Image (cartoon, rainbow, N blue to C red; front, side, top):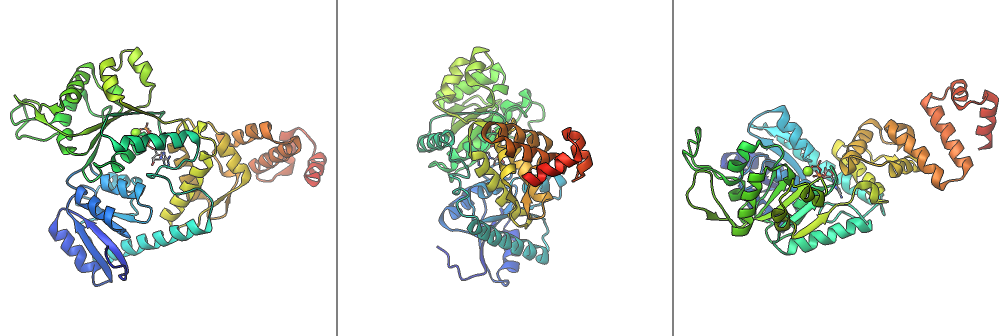
Length: 446
Ligand SMILES: Nc1ncnc2c1ncn2[C@@H]1O[C@H](COP(=O)(O)OP(=O)(O)OP(=O)(O)O)[C@@H](O)[C@H]1O
Ligand SMILES: [Mg+2]
């Protein structure tokens, strides 16, 4: 364990020795202790042994997909911030890095003052997050594997992850869009003995059918026009680790036959090669449709389904997770407040009720986006029903009809109408179908 008397412990994850040296020359004199790793597996080993304050991670590193390290740290290590670095300036790259959870984004060559500002900002964000956590006790425990959820349904999922992590069998993760399938796949990988080997995610729906085979299995020089050199595929990259085949139902029948063979033989055949080679890869797949229906409709081969479904993890939609909605809302409020350097906003009782009653067709991703917007728009203070997207304001009214006395519902409704007309009582009275005097009396009564 490294000594903690420095201003902070920094891990520079970069495969360029010159970059590592340049960053060390800036950071060490400023009082930071600097460690380095040249690949994702090396970085994971260090991160497992030591709590770093900041990881300065190149978005593209050997041993895993782009941004994989950024995502891993942001989702699993609550006490560590990430500053992403890249060799090329692209807007998309910056957006992706920040979306993955990076605190800041630097383009090489990195100026010394910009570097120090980013690191200081990241450490300040950590400090804010810690004090926010203390000021807000009882609002949920840190999520297991970065997954928040106390509901019986999510506890079941977390148990299934633990079971899946302890063996290398295939896992089929199913759940509606935005329920956390990829997060669960990562949790299985990082909770398993394969954690220090790569996790490679492949979106089967996003890669054209004609390319998928060579992307997955690689190709040998001369296999097709343009194959000017031999190239490894995702399966080789994931050797020793986990491959996550996202949206497995998007694969063609012929691809499914090839995958079946890989699972049976534990061997892959590069495009254009005459012999197969062994790989040691745990396969996790996902679908946002009901797996049984996929089989019944022959979208997914039945024999492949049984191979993929050794462990089934079905993630419940958010609307079936009860108070987890509130737990997640608070979690995201803290997360985004720390990220944007703002005070953590409170949520009024009525706003919480509205969130709880909404049906969340976009599941956790939708909730995350809603809270992110609220944190940006609300300058500290309390989030009220009127701040919520219109759809949720209606669900506030719906929910209240089930569990609350009529007078409260009336007051809530009067308030929401008033707020929708910015306090104009004449207009509110007109909408409510009562005169101004009755409105005044009702407000006085309540
Ligand atoms: N239980 C949870 N706790 C905290 N964050 C979560 C949880 N579930 C999902 N998230 C967050 O919600 C977002 C969506 O999750 P993820 O991408 O894993 O969903 P998905 O099921 O793969 O979605 P899609 O079907 O659209 O691909 C991510 O930002 C993820 O970090
Ligand atoms: Mg996904």
